[in-house]
Image (cartoon, rainbow, N blue to C red; front, top):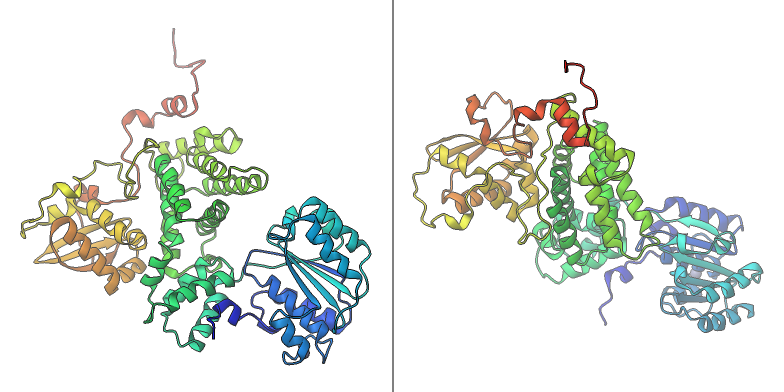
Length: 558
Ligand SMILES: [Zn+2]
């Protein structure tokens, strides 16, 4: 028997099986029960959220030999024919491939004919926004006076492209992205039925990567099924070309630093991996929203759909922004997404929004001015959030891509300048000096582990045992896990040739030995270096930051 793709094999067959769209299933179920089914529906929503499955189930419900019933039997001739796509009464059209007016007209000519065997003739037009205007008009004419025995189900991922005149003649249902935990649970069910061994972590990643679309999630599971062994989170990350969470964490690190070069690189590498620019923009908008939520509503973390580790990473990152900065980023990205509906150059729109996000100087809007004022306030010390690096924007043409660790402080020697046979007698000072480089090594292996270590510093090194300080008990616990700890040990081996035992303590923990003031420079984070004396002078700052001029000075006795 030919191999059947998982998403076909496990396509929902009843309203109960449609996941994440209960608001739609219950409305349709009631309509069938009360004999109030409309003549035309518009199903909108992202791909893979159940639009065509729901259309087929509705068709089955209306034509089931034991119906009409919200619970079609699934075994009568009509149900079987609709399920396998051979029913003469269910006409499915993909407007993406039949956009010519002749095709549509030809198909619509059949509307007047009575159903072949069932009660209703159901026309399902997928991606209806792709119809040409003449085709739309042909459809519109039919919708104006539909015969009693006909039902239209129009599906689209882009509702705003469907003519208003069509929308107004249909009952609209908005399909939502399916929550990732719902997808993960379904994947686990399917994996069990298929006897696939997949780690729960791996399924979580697949589910989040699918961004609410079940079809994509099941397609990924299909690919993983060919591994022929137990599938791990690492396998999934490898297959999907790096985690999106990491890509966005990296992008926002660059935004926090105002590092324009890395912003361009971030966009470039995500797009080069085949991501759709609008998806990237939506993802960045989602990330900004999560940071805003973490920054402004402590205790509301549960509203963020991600793993506890990713939430901790984001919480640390959120501290590098002020709430109004994040609001501005949300505004700019949302506007870019709206503009993308009408403008062809999506990538340029995204890049412009990100550049404006990163450097208020380039944003002519009042919020840009506010951003500049905030930046000045932070430097004078009026407001309290952690300082944000004011690194000079990097040249855009730089290659290869630098590691995302923000180190405006003097860079350590590149790895290849260090002899490969490093002396075994390495002291605490060496470890401290090589810490930024070690973190860059970690970053190459995993952005997440790198984020767990940002900021961090070595505290003591004694008899081959290293104690490292990280920002919270959570981070210490995460880093103590075998996989993460080994990654740091490997990085130390790469940077210094040592493989010490490592333990972790949280900042301020009683276990942490006191560190002399002058050793603070070993902390690697994305803070600014101490501003020079002149940078504290409000007048100088206003001149530099806002281009202000002194027009009158009261201290002047001239
Ligand atoms: Zn039936």
